[in-house]
Image (cartoon, rainbow, N blue to C red; front, side, top):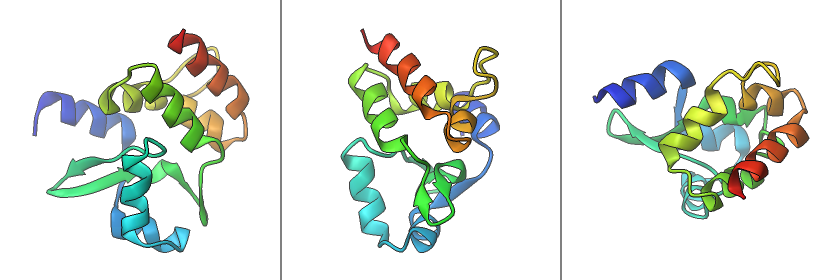
Length: 119
């Protein structure tokens, strides 16, 4: 595991395998993989398995606004690692992390910031 992987793990915390993520969402692991391929979700290989941050799942759905925000970050040229870093790094002006703000239904401000970085 590289230093960068360890840094991301420290920021993200808990990871879900595709199978673990698919269960509460009521979809197949292949659907999660498709969302990743379509840049609507981000996944990285952890322990030999493709996984997503547990914070991306909110009950029986993805966090509101997450697919659009992930797409914005991808369109802005962010790599998966850079996007994960941005989503999970505390921002005093929010306050909290962008993913926390999205989980608290404050996604409009998060998307505004993502859009401003894209242009």
